[in-house]
Image (tube, rainbow over all chains, first blue to last red; front, side, top):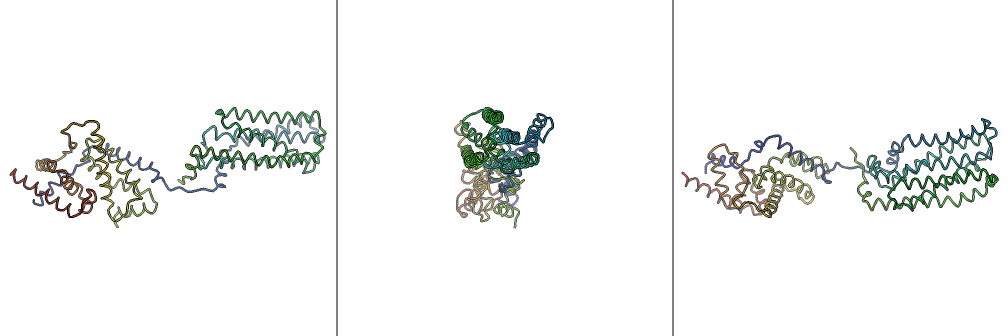
Length: 276
Length: 170
């Protein structure tokens, strides 16, 4: 065969794909490239982020709404007391401060519950958006941020209360801490024990109801046995007993959340943050 | 270093974004190959996609010794073979062999197409890979799974058959 014939043979066998309409080729090529991009092996390299960075990324999701509602709750407590005392804040004393701080602590827990249960309702949406970490890390991050916020609110309230009524720091701390521990421990246990409930709103309702009940008990104590507030030793003992229970309850809740994450495959899928 | 080697090198270093360029580089060649080896255009397009996905998935097992093109065509060949097997289950017409690929511009080219199609299967594929896809003997050997010397002798035999047919026509 001659060289020319080889060329003819080569041309005869070469299909000119451009004859197949450029648009079709382009569309199909794009389809192939898209499926290539979707392959896990071709995903853009991912970068692990630390827990602290993850926690900071949660701040936008915690939302101004929550912090504004908690700030509003604190203002309301002061406002109600101010009005009930006809502006006579000098009259604000031991009799009012414990109730005010206790209600404030319970309200802080009440406003935090919907936020803490939100990942269960929206199927980890904020984790996907923020950084794709596991559920227990999200809860831990939110708890830390909430506690930091509670501390600030407590600091301001306690400062004002102590300044006005001249109470000791221990007393002010106990009047705030004990209701907070009781509300927190109870809610953590309720959330754990209602993990099978499909309706998140019912779980929120149950926790809010429990907090409401605690507030009613505080109010009842304030009305019927105000002397209880003088026995600060008993408050300290109760707080000492409750604190480990609180830590244990939170720990168990986080542990349960980690198991939920593993069951649904969220942990494996979400350990990385897509850098771009 | 060729662009292909450069891209492969970068992929091995973890820059998987290079896959897109590598796929684009070979897309039309593989489409051409799959059109020739598929019952219809849709099947060919599916085969192209499957080929590239398989190549990427199996790339970690691929040992780079300058044979990437051979590896790619080998995967395409296997994909097309699998596709024919699957199509056989849905009862294709008996006389259907390959889809009509005739975009030939001259009578001589049409004749060549018929001559190549008339070759025995083991010769036809080698002629096709050599003349349509311009693969080296080493690459063809990899695709068809034969020693290089066997590929060379089969190509010689195929060309001899074509030549004798041309002479017979004349």
